[in-house]
Length: 266
Image (cartoon, rainbow, N blue to C red; front, top):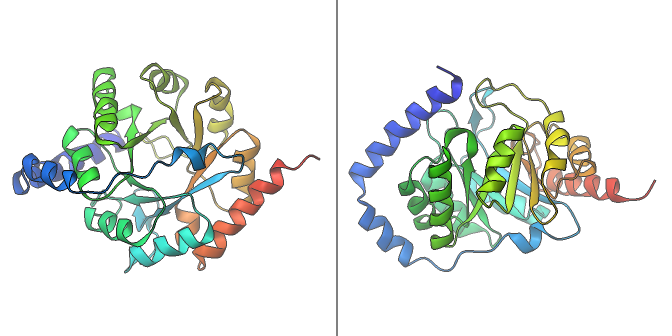
């Protein structure tokens, strides 16, 4: 059993408990009362790099990262610093997140909000919509072709923008074949948790023009954001480096400035 398999086992156990506690019909009713979702793609397609700043308490590889008693305040700092979107970890066991965090962040910022979780069931997309997400993460590694296609279709139905995540050339092709328009390349191999930032540079050329390229994982400072930008990233998702920065608003600005500098001719 890989690390990812272990995580998914816990995800499905927790999902079953939530399904027993909250019927799908209740989620549908709540989702129907939500305002329209915010479209992140105009910002992501702009000439400047976009930062997705993440509310992340802990991780399987590093353990506790930061004490975040007020995720709404942190998200506000990110948005003020110039983040184009906020990512909220909602997985409980390994990342210390919750749907309550998602709801709190949604109420505090005007930029789009991503539900970042291990989504394996349509119920989770209904949750995402009911709790205020504008985007939802879909990981190719944890979904077969039929599941990925079905979940992409439900995202369209719900008005959610899917961020489809890949780690290998095969996963990139599967994402493209399914119609992904927002494609993340994760430097972290979720089966081992090993991080290799060079993965983005190797796979980015396989992503055609018109598909937004997102670099995920491995950012320790502004220089890493600049490197991802230089290798073709339209968007960079940053978690640990921001929650540990001590000044998340300024850190977001530094990351954006570093990427802008990499756009200048030498």
